[in-house]
Length: 303
Ligand code: CUA
Image (cartoon, rainbow, N blue to C red; front, side):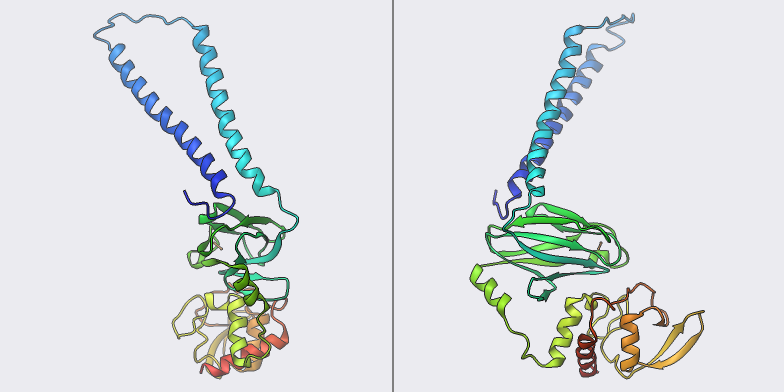
């Protein structure tokens, strides 16, 4: 088996031990049952007999299962304990799970929709959710941890092989739960440092606008090609006329101008486009006015 990360061995050991014990008993109990059906068949034993207690049996079927359960506990404990011992020298990445996308924020402020990490380096993910329960799951690394609003959960790993591995959300979180997908990109230290140090300040504003949208997971619900997802598409949004619902349930017509876009980001449910669900949270704390300007510049460019 390939150990692509530090917990693969411990988790797989626990799994194989428990599976092996379960399989053994499945077969042993089934065979015993069949044996008893034959041996204690009514035709062979026309008169019922009372079976007296047997001390040896009582001790055996208490002691053996206790030992087996302790063996399972041992493997589970060893596998799990390592996951809760966070190394001091690990690098920290803030992992945000929101309806319905992941983003990863680095010490220098860089935000990425995929988790980029150097190989052979311990990485602690500080888990954050602004809305509901999610669960960050990396099957290849055998790790999964709930992302709970208001609770600072953590998880960690060290990847041993470069490559791309799936990230899933393993806690049902609403309509597009099954689309909450991302990747871990394990890179050589050199490639990682190049990416980490990359300077984005020179990029054109329209380009960074899209990056901000992607980093905040907006494109999980708003398509770029005009197709309908959870919210209205970004394509052709700017300057378009919209029927919106206002508080109290009445409708009015608005033009998607800068003010309307700002309102939609900061108070998304105050004037929501008709026929769309009220599921977006406010991004007042996560998207600054400066970033909003870049988003608007981008939206203008995808008419
Ligand atoms: Cu997030 Cu399921």
